[in-house]
Length: 113
Length: 114
Image 1: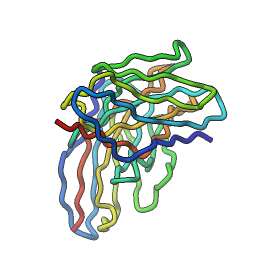
Image 2: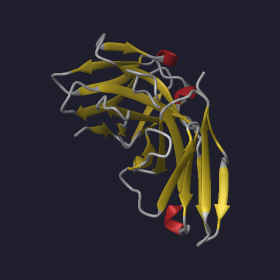
Image 3: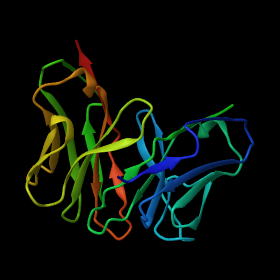
Image 4: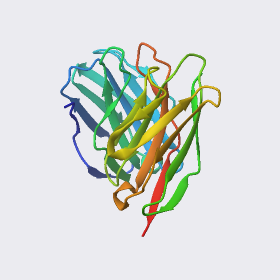
C-alpha cells in the first residue's frame, strides 16, 4: 500500500513564525502536491512538484514556498505565518503511469495565533 | 479547462435509505473522474474512479457511480446508507495530463439520520 505521511497532525504557531510542513511518500512517486482545505472551499492546490527540485505554482501560492530536495520528500514552508493561513493542509502523491490517482496523507491542522 | 460542481454542500439521509450525491463535470478532453471520501480528521481516501472503461463503476463500501457523458455527470450512489458513511465526499476530475493534477469539487458532507 502507498503510504504518505505528514510530520504533524496538529500544529499551533504564532503570527510571524516560519513554519515547515513535511510530507514523505514511500512509493517512488514522481508527483507530489500540497493542498489547503477550508470549509466550503474544498481543496485548493498550493504547489506541486513533478520531479526533484522542480516545482510549479498551484492556484493559491501566495505566502507559501516549497522544497523538494529528495524524491520522497516535499516540504511546504510558510515564511511568515499569518492567521489567515490557519487551515488543514493535505499532502498527496501520484505517479503510477496511466493511473492519475492521488494518494493522500492524514493532514496537518495548523492554527496560527 | 476542467471543473467540477457538486450539488449540495450538505445532504442528510436516513439510515437504510438511498444515498445520492451529485457531481457534474466540465472537461475539454475525455476525463478521468474520481470520488474521494474524507472521514473526520483524516486525509482523503479513494472511493472509486472512472477511467473510460465501464460507465458504471463500483467502489469500496458499497458505493458506485455512473458516468453519463450526455449529462456530464458522475453521481455517487449507495442503495442503503449506514451510520459509518457519515463523512465528506469529494468529486474530482483529471485532464490526464503529464503532472497528474486533479480538480476537486467543494465537497458534500453526508449526514446519516438514525
